[in-house]
Amino acid sequence: MPPPFTKFHGLGNDYIVLEAQHLQDISNLGDFARQICNRHYGAGADGIAVIGAAVDADFNVRIFNPDGSEAGLSGNGTRCATAYLYYSGIWNAAELRLSTRTGIKKYRLCEQPGDGKYIFESELGQPKFAPQAIPMLMAGQQLDRVVGFPLAVGDESFPVTAMQMGNPNCCIFLEDFAALDWRRVGRAIETHPQFPDRTNVVFIRVLDRQTIELRIWERGVGETTASGTCSCAGAVAAMVNEKVDRDIKVLMPGGEVRINWRTDGEVVITGSAEVVYSAEWLV
Image (cartoon, rainbow, N blue to C red; front, side, top):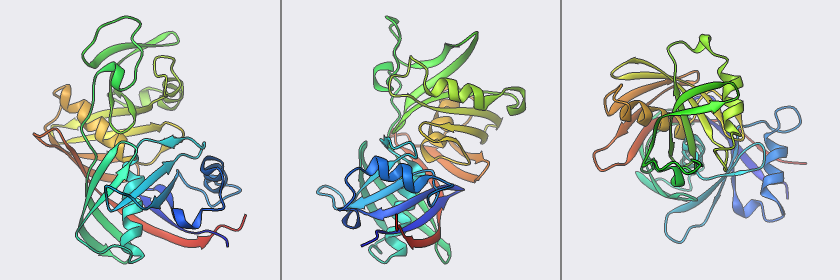
């Protein structure tokens, strides 16, 4: 039987959501993700979210990138998966606990402003700054955290703030996005030898103490209109560099989210997920 799926997007960052029970005939989910995410020969998406049963949470979700790699976490991907559970009527309680590769994440339904659109407050975990936690290779240098580190990229050097925020993230502050070919730099840093697991690359423009703007080069995806984990990482990077307050608005080409880095260390993101369409995969 062809597996049914529903496509959602979080600020233009689109995910195909499927139930694990419908994928029992699929032997390799990475290959499947490459096929269905292809924007010319497949349904087209920035990733897939596969929902299954969980022992220690309400549900489990696995996130796969368009290149077939499995992500540790996706803020938008898990938010789309959560929206699917409400949209399909599988879940209707006010809160939901999702098990991911990086632990259990909590989601609270804040608002349903329209048919198929949901706004959630999500706890995405605590950032880790130690190089070994990111991971980031430091060639013998002993650092407790990577803040303002001069990263050599070819003949250039960029001061970066790096962290593990569900995925490796490398953040760079810019005054003007147009002044740098950030796509070229993002592509180069994603596969930089100092990041053995590759990395997301987040370019940050600080507008004021309450607002930042981002451009995002996502690991295994490329340029994206939005990203939950990247927006959290960009916000936290601006906070640890004392450029903004601890509760801010994050602007991206796809829209905006709210990021609050609570005093208990948890990073909370408030953003939307919206249904696009449902179909069956016939290939």
